[in-house]
Image 1 (tube, rainbow, N blue to C red):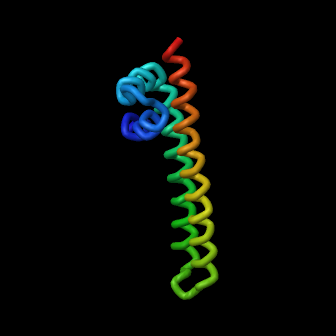
Image 2: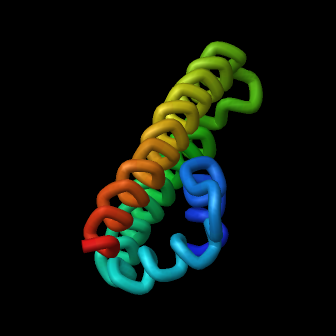
Length: 102
């Protein structure tokens, strides 16, 4: 999963041998990256689970307002979450690349 997620930052930033650069960078920072990915996963699961739990517990099959609010909250959260996640990927790539090149 890590190699596939860092493929785009590597191709975007490297002219020569993006895969080789990405692989050496990830090998040097592997556990730090994995722990942060687990934190992102945990936050995503908790928030989405909370939204689903609210949807199930409110019997919102007839309530258009509740469904609309939950849809908008989910949309906003997903937009912010994946924007932050992609920003995190590029910043970690840059930081680990400079660490690996030293």
